[in-house]
Image (cartoon, rainbow, N blue to C red; front, top):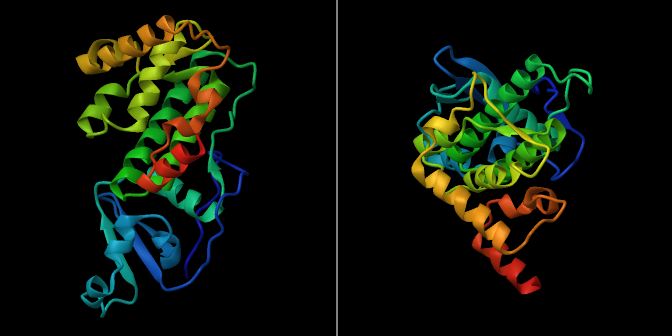
Length: 251
């Protein structure tokens, strides 16, 4: 029997696209422990090119003797995949609601924020792996919402972005802008362990990009009370060529 994932505090109401539950049930085996998730085929196909390709007829014929399709993802993390499935099923935006009191600014709360940023980063990497542009954009919005609520931003991701081949991604651009703008904002960098890792381990190109944005910001006398991610989160979304043409046509 297929089961919907349990709701997570990382989800809040904000419906986007409706879903239609059709087709068979797919079993995902996650991580070396083979954590099992049973998912409707139509849900997996909804926005992931990777899953659509894996569920093509020629691939499925090879698995014809199985009671249901099985997809092994041994290198993925259970909590990340669970959050991805919650997003697929919920028709909701990824967004973190602080579980500690609003006036709690002790270190444990900051450490909690840092861990949530790490979870969101894991989700972004997974969405990139399964070629799900919509999930990547939803995760970017999740980062921005978390940043605004916590008045903090992740400071141990730059090295990981390079390791994971994401140095040209919108998330890289968002992190660069965070460093360029945070000095004049009530926003602090946080890390999961001690001093922000980016300070000592971020690649040279990252700091060059930060300096370039900082110089442009001051050269243009851009002292808006809003940061670019507050003015328009979609600036950091991944777009198709059709999206870009439509956007330029409206301009």
